Length: 495
Ligand code: PHE
Ligand code: NA
Image 1 (cartoon, protein in one colour):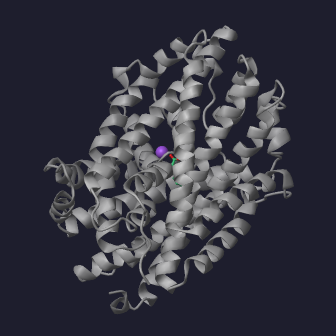
Image 2: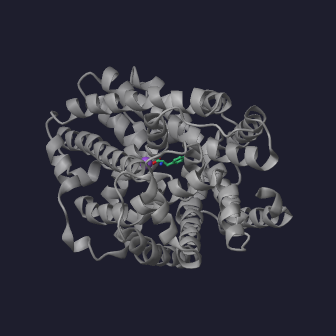
Image 3: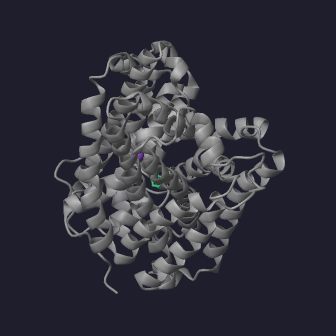
């Protein structure tokens, strides 16, 4: 069977950007920046972008382009070349994507609900009670005792699934590429309109000041660096099978360096736009309520679903700006969800030699059912716990192993030669230096730090048994399954 291909270069870039730009840019980036001292975050963030983000993106685009497969096939082929069996790493990444797929869709579901509420601000004035009690119906549940099924959360999640699985069923050109070509320009326009209005609100500039004023005293704080590196891998969707799958559909003649730079720069530029939007609104809110900025901000999920609705209540024409904001979140989330599903679907297609529609039915059907666990009283807790372990342990572990294998076991210089031959502008030796030394050192430090921290203190106040099961246990099971598939495979057949 002929492998599918992107129709145009811009189509590929928009799809890659659609994956990269997600809820993380509008919502995670601003609160990461906030929690890490505002402007202090920029220097580590930009450093991580250049030393890890760009070279990693070039590396993944090259691997997908050359080895023409989803993650398991890419690593399997790479390994055979050097006499190693590496398919497991691909499956581990696919499993990370699969886990993210089922909880990310829950957040998209919430944003769809809030898009509905935003037309009349039916969240009322106590937005905290509204989100946690009325909407999520959070009781005294734990991540494992889920409580009761909540149809009002399941319905918007089903809508999200319908849209994203349609794109997957329809395929690379007709589905993913077409959806990206509609969604991405729309998203940019919406966010530009929002920013255009927000920066003229009284107090907005004070908010931006907070975001952009560098605090050099934080520059030696390892926590800030760790947050910056973690955010770069998450925000660029690298290290968990997505960009490998997308670049495996690139045509023979593709300018990889250029594509990678564009994708990274557009994504990180968009994060800054997200930051401007959020901090502009927060600055306005602080001014309206005559409070210091630090008192109006909440972090985590509270920012998008508690603080922003409260801020929207205070805006002029809230029935326009509110829906614009939540619609932007919905679109950003959907395009990322499409890419996650494609990472999993393409792996199944490769492995079982299934046609797209069959593979998509398996992936989306199973995913839909599992995701319903999040439409319960305990859904948020379940999501929060799994998200922590996936992002802070599994994802960084996967990126770290990928880097070590590629740069210390294999010759990363080959990748540079390969991409430079294809690309109009060439990249220099910094590419190898960043990937061989700086990134692994940084990732290694962060990973060890997170491991030690989590072993010693756990995460949040969740019961130990839940953390063992859904955190460590889940990761162990993912590794076990990956290794099992690895050994059950006949690798000769892969060639
Ligand atoms: N890059 C996405 C973001 O910033 C992260 C992501 C991508 C998450 C794809 C899930 C799926 O939000
Ligand atoms: Na992103």
